[in-house]
Image (cartoon, rainbow, N blue to C red; front, side, top):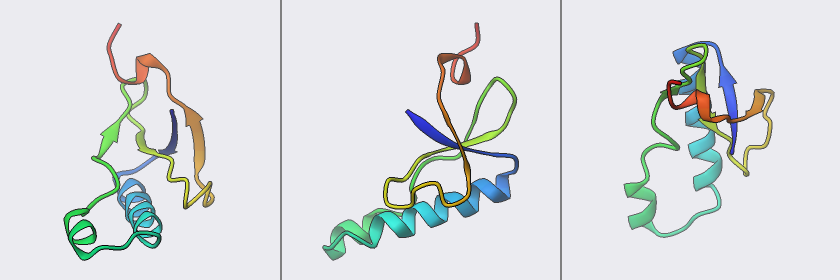
Length: 77
């Protein structure tokens, strides 16, 4: 899976906000729209503490650095 890789919590929050807006722009149904409040949970990868956000297909690169996840991002060896 591909992720945006961000240096700060603020960048992560902004990225997740943009992803949510882009994702919801193509959806309809007020129940769905009212229940969907965030694109993803806040995450930091274990390898370096950088913030990661799953790539939003509707948003594309949007100027963010993208990397493919590896197992060591999520589990300690």
